[in-house]
Image 1 (spheres, rainbow, N blue to C red):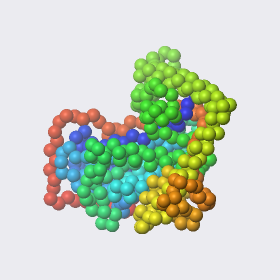
Image 2: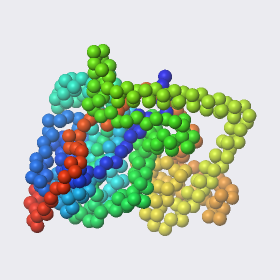
Image 3: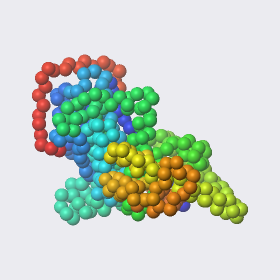
Length: 436
């Protein structure tokens, strides 16, 4: 049994699509959506209809098609090195059914729209098949009911795929008016050297919160953790000295798998180093868990565990009282929702709207103490109708090793270092399509 304590889907990088790198947001969108789009700025056509792997797709904060969205985003930028889009590529837990994966990604996209006033285009991608020929057959036969069910069963089979479900959540770098679709000012809070890292942490924390809630709703004790190894070690949640592993990429991973099946092929050095680092990490985990178990046993025998539990319970009740007072005394609906979001004692395990309403009703009906009394005594009000975070998560072992992003985007190219000249037309023809 491998002593892993980090869910393999703990992966959510943020990338930027910039003209300085020779990239086009239209081309990236066409690839992700497995469709054909024309970049009206350059006149180039990108056709990825023959590619497979698309599970679901959607738009948030935009009424037209995805092709219209990204052509409008390109048109809104004048500079030749402009940043046109941002993209999150989170891994999706294979424990979640496809409908729940879509719900998670769509809900998070709605949060991005409301938080930064942007338009969002999201897609959910399936994992790659170990046998490419069999995978193409399954995708080709998916149009019948029997074929679709066979494909879905195969996607979750660890013997047939790496179970690398993942999403592409691409959003505009400018604010977009929800009613008119007009592009406004840049989202500078994400570009600023000071606020940018803070906003990234906020985005990753929101994804982690929503993903773990989805896992809880589906009866899984698994939890993702997007903190760095160093941050987890400093918090006492992981051993010190864990080594990060470089992303191998699809080609190196394919070569490594082929070498594992064929003794005549040579294992890539990058794959060997990755396996060695993983083995050292597992040894550190095993030693650390053994020491922690001994420390806990010692604490139980000495009675220290009961004191720690009592102190934590007192702190939890104090936090509950503080959160209750803040929610009750909030003047506006927006302030109340913000108070619920920032409440450390409340975890919204239902849908966002139902969770907010339940938390606000609970705060208004509970016997909340006065502001002066908070922190001096504990009230006997009822518990919130939402689940407080436990002090100790139930631990599970995760045997599955997955590469969180095992595919290659043909639109991802290295910067050429050459300057490109962009001429903005006074009148640009925009082709309107139906809602995508």
